[in-house]
Length: 102
Image (cartoon, rainbow, N blue to C red):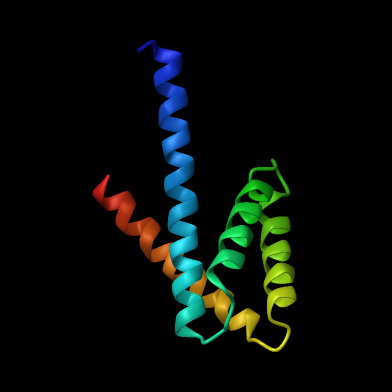
């Protein structure tokens, strides 16, 4: 395998891992807060949020706002802000664990 193909393969695997971890955090934040969003909707929100987050400079802020709006659209009566706080805490803890391990 050439060097460029290896880097491409590692990048794809890294993207899949990041999306999977973000989905895991959002899914369990949904469960812990009884938000009531279906798993398929959470997967779509995770992928869209990840893609928006890759935009340079403004991606992080726009992805947080878009995630809030998408979750609010899924369940207007749910506690979106609390769910997102739990999601961010879980994501930070998992990021620390993976940083220490790898």
